[in-house]
Length: 309
Length: 273
Ligand SMILES: Nc1ncnc2c1ncn2[C@@H]1O[C@H](COP(=O)(O)OP(=O)(O)OP(=O)(O)O)[C@@H](O)[C@H]1O
Ligand SMILES: Nc1ncnc2c1ncn2[C@@H]1O[C@H](COP(=O)(O)OP(=O)(O)OP(=O)(O)O)[C@@H](O)[C@H]1O
Ligand SMILES: [Mg+2]
Ligand SMILES: [Mg+2]
Image (cartoon, rainbow over all chains, first blue to last red; front, side):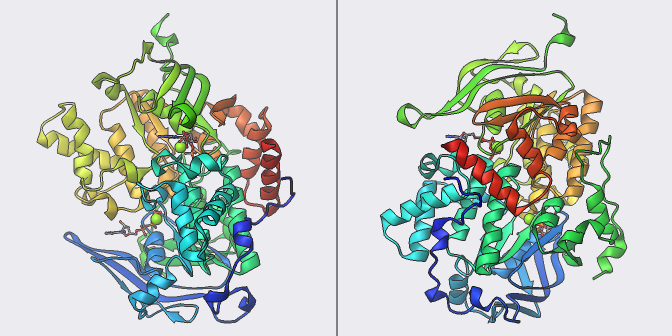
């Protein structure tokens, strides 16, 4: 195959949207945001006191690529998991408003949430191997996802699973299909998770560090798949990443988080012009291929940041 | 041969095959390299190309089917003894899998000391606190469990554990890919400082070419279980690799671009034909 544009995987191309109702590409122009969060707060109650993981986060996003960056522990993953209501006790989630495509996520019953999870909102977890079933062959897990979401025959599910593996640039899909999760390299596990999460054609994909284990050429091709889903199907993408340069070149907007809050929201291509000292500090700590230095700058945190935003 | 000439690590014609018969898969195909004492040697390359497997072969965790490996001139046989563990430690790629879910951080960090009979309770507690401080974690983390930590915090614990026995060689598999850029800077500074202070030798696997350029003197680029080229950091910085694959890596590292992605896909499709 020698197309000069990478093709959207066939498995995704012939999508069937009939049972998904509203929220497909056709109303991409609709003014209603895909996701609105107001004043999200997540606390973890432990024996040694309370961790305030998210402290009043508000955001609104459409069918766009929104990057979420911020230092470790700033609440990026917890925010993603809160949207899917995957925070378990002793974690406590509160918000003034949390609405996905007209559905109130705060008051939705567990049955509604189950229908949303993995179908309309999918999340690629930060730790791919942890999310795969260790005692089930990789291919069977993908095929099962197809059968659950697309109601296809066993044989077709297998064919499509192989196609998905190829789409995420797995070199020998047959071998990987029959592999156990522990037999995958770090980047292979990550791509398997991406493949699985794309199968239901979610309206919102929360991708938590989806390419951190991929080499840069493969990462770029995998990002292109997500990019195409945003532009052709109007998927919304919440892209959580530590890679500031990648986010700047890939996303539309970037949310910068600090200590459970949004410090600033900035147009991705202007990320390098950000003025906030926290964002500047993050940018300054990057090593650069063309600027050798002995020691890297680290962040000097200002207590005043905790009161901001 | 004088001690100074003896490489810290010498690997010759290493091959690793997983599985048997029809299922056999050769993950490493005749890899050779040497790392001098005090050097940091980088491994980059395609996902699934065998980088982690090379490190695991050195630590005795991969089915080696051919080749020779030496640590400070000592040939490695099948088993790794206690002395090996004190000399060579590894930080694994996957911080979830490498931390026991039901052990507190304190138990995880004390374990190597207990196994090797180092210190009494009091001394061990002090070393655990110092190790936590070294990787930028406060004492409040000591009795937490892995699931109570963010991804970056877990990885710092994994690094702290590898350093508990004060090894001479540390194999670092993507040590900072789960970290935010500021903690990454702290950890890289820490790794450099420890290297200076203790004369450590590192092998560093990373997808981040800027991290490799910052840390390493030399590096190898892997694809399909082989080294496609070995280069100096100066060559990497100057952007003058010999192989097209390495040039693509450098190109991709400059940022996302839809057309570039299409070009890589087309190149790979051609290669597969
Ligand atoms: N189950 C839990 N119990 C207690 N504390 C938790 C739990 N999960 C997360 N936290 C805490 O909540 C805070 C936010 O964690 P989160 O995982 O969202 O960070 P993050 O921004 O994703 O960081 P990273 O970039 O390192 O992945 C951290 O301080 C973390 O220790
Ligand atoms: N235990 C195992 N059993 C079978 N195959 C394995 C096993 N471990 C690794 N492999 C295979 O060996 C190859 C090399 O894997 P390795 O983990 O060394 O890659 P890597 O270069 O570290 O990739 P990444 O950058 O994605 O981490 C892969 O194709 C993988 O599927
Ligand atoms: Mg996280
Ligand atoms: Mg690896």
